[in-house]
Image (cartoon, rainbow over all chains, first blue to last red; front, side, top):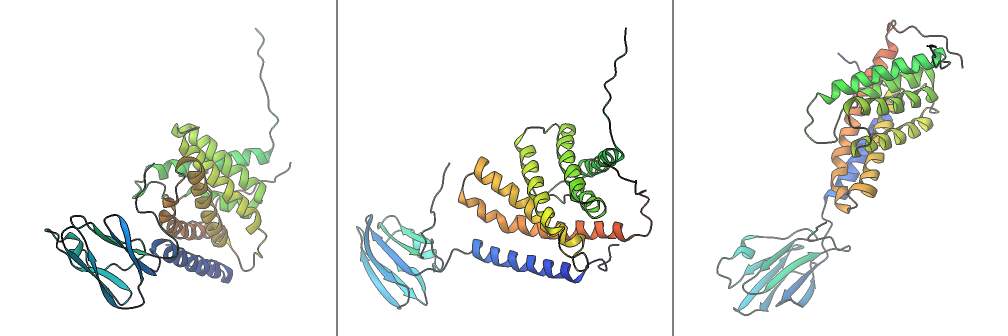
Length: 124
Length: 181
């Protein structure tokens, strides 16, 4: 059985430093980043860009009717939509930068964006 | 027919390096048989030998043992000049470079565990850099860093403890040869 006796004081410090570094790296790399604003698109064009700081409900017209986008508590969701299958509504609250909800039939989408734009699809 | 033998002049230090490298290779082979949950995450048991050599005989010999182990180990595994081989080389080079610095830390406070952790981090950094610049030049690689770094810290600590355990044992069975040259 390995004993911990050979660990000297400096070793403990290095170990602690390692744990702190890993924690920091994990938090930095695995978080989508804080979202600042919501980009709302309708028929492929930007309908409006709204900050997440103010709670509000925005009505966006599309070919099928009006989609309602709710912004609450620095989160955004599509609250109501005339699309038949309601996928974008079921997606629920978007919290992190890069998250997106798309209502294809009504051609409305809402995307959260932070300071640095991240990839939404990749291929190589 | 004249028997012609090519004779290299070897020193006791050379023999010792060879013995240690062989030991390290044995551990690499052993480790290759252990299934890994994620490609690239390996305990790196051979580095225990490198650490012991570093502490007992200094950095130069540890560097020899480490690089010889990678080279000869790849020949045995049949991975010589494959991407995996270059990853090992790049990891080993980074790791001995860091050990070259960390060996100067005061031995009163810093033992094999420190060297092992630094070496493990350098190893994974060297490998990831090579992967990034050569194999997968893509920022998505960053998502894997926390996993590899955690494995490096864990295995680095364990390997360091094993090395320290051997170094502290009163009689490890190794005869310390008188090294000249």
